[in-house]
Every structure is written in C-alpha cells, then in structure tokens.
Amino acid sequence: MGVEVWVPATTANLGPGFDCLGAALDFGNRFRFALRGAGEPVEVVGADLPADNLAYRAFALVYERLGQPVPPVTLTLELEVPLARGLGSSATAIVAGVLAAHRLLGEPLPETELLNWAVALEGHPDNVVPAWRGGCCLVCGVHVCSIPWHPDILPVLAIPEFTLSTAAARAVLPEQVPYHDAVTNLGALGCLLQGLKRGDPALLRQGLQDRLHQPYRRRLIPGYDQVEQAALAAGAYGVVISGAGPTLLALAAPAQATAVATAMAQAWQEVGVQATARVTRVSDKGAQVKS
Image (cartoon, rainbow, N blue to C red; front, side, top):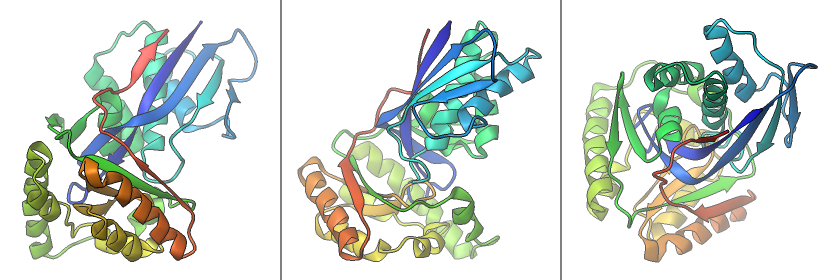
C-alpha cells in the first residue's frame, strides 16, 4: 500500500511580497510513500538524503498529531527542484509528507488544519500555500487570496550552481526598517498585484521594487548586479530574488523570455558562476495525490 504525491516548485517573496506572496511553477518533485511491514522507520530511494528528512518528518507529524504509530515506509524521490536555491524544495517535501500521511490515514481532517500544520513546519506560508493549491497566492493571516496572473507574463529563472540557506538569508535582515521603506513597499505591492492581473509593463516595473529584504540579501549573491542588468537590457520587466535565493527571477513577455534567460546565464558565467536558466509558467495545478 502506498501514496504518490507530486508537488510544484514555487517562487516566493516576489519583490515586495516578502513572506506573503508566492506562485507555483510548472515543474516539481515527486514523492512515493510505500508502507512496509517491518524494518527501519524509513528507507530513502532516489536521492542522497538522510532518513530524518523533511518529507518523512512531515509524514510522521500527521500520524503523531492524530495519536497513531508511524508506520515504516520506503520513500522514493524524483527531484526536479534543486535544493537550497530558493525554489521551494522544502515546501514540496512538507506538503508531500503531510498529504501522503493524511491519505493513508483515510483523510479525517479538514484541509485548513493540515495546511496550517504544513505552514508551521515551514515557518512561513508563501511557498507552502501555492505548492499546496497552485497558482499565485497572497496570504494574510488565515486568509488566502488567489491572485490573477496574466498569461503573457513569463517567469524566467536563473539558477546558479551555488546554494544559499534560508537561515543565512534571514540572518542578514534588519530587525527594523525605516518607515519610508515600509510605505514604499506597500505601494509597490499594490502595483505588482495590478500589474500581474493586467499584464501591464509599467506597473510590473514599479511593482518589482523592494526595500524590505532584497537590498540586504543581494550582497549574498555574487554577480547579482550583472545578472540584473543583463536581464533588463534583454527586455525583462524586473529582477527579484526567488524565495531566499540564490536563484534570480525575471518577469518577461513571451517574445523576450528566451533572450532574457540567455542573458542572465551568460552574465553569471562572465563572473565565474555556472548557472542554468529556464523559462517557466505559473501552474494552476497544486499538489496532486494518488494512491
């Protein structure tokens, strides 16, 4: 007996949407949880991850919260989302573990309770919610708003070979920001939401500006300035850090998206960093569970 869960990659923060705005992308990770009669608590197949990995911890959490013994499982992974690159790999693991355990237990709980557990385990909702539900999501407390994303806006990812931990990215953030910066971000977020809905280049350019996290995190990403300049010169509306980084996300029109991807990868190569660039789409499909 077993369950398979596919969970999409996500890009979060989206400029001024720090810790509250994220979108599901059109690729992801697949997790298979197969029950075993006996043996070690978990056997991992398909990836070099410890037994106590995040997917298994999320899986075990549901059993423990429901007062049930955690069964031994074989966890088989097919990973397309790179680890520690700001594309929601941890959210895919958490969502998969929670949903797999819930299916195997007969799905006794409401979605909202499970989603709250997943968010608590991740620590913030902007990756977990779109990974779970798909699309672009704005999260405010317990409320989730689906944000329209114009089909002519394509996410372009430039994924470097180096990693950056979320803990390191959060460590550089100040405890307080100037009042003017907070007000500026409020306006930018409004412009971004309208720009995404309308596909309006002017609103997108203004809306992708941020003063809460990017000015502090960009210094952790070698070549940030060069990659940003190359993307803008190739026609991107703007460049932001995907999640906690180091992946950089550009938004572009379909006619410019491939050129933007090429320019970003080349700019990183010119400063000695190997990177993979890909043009993606926002996926309306969230996590998919099948027995």
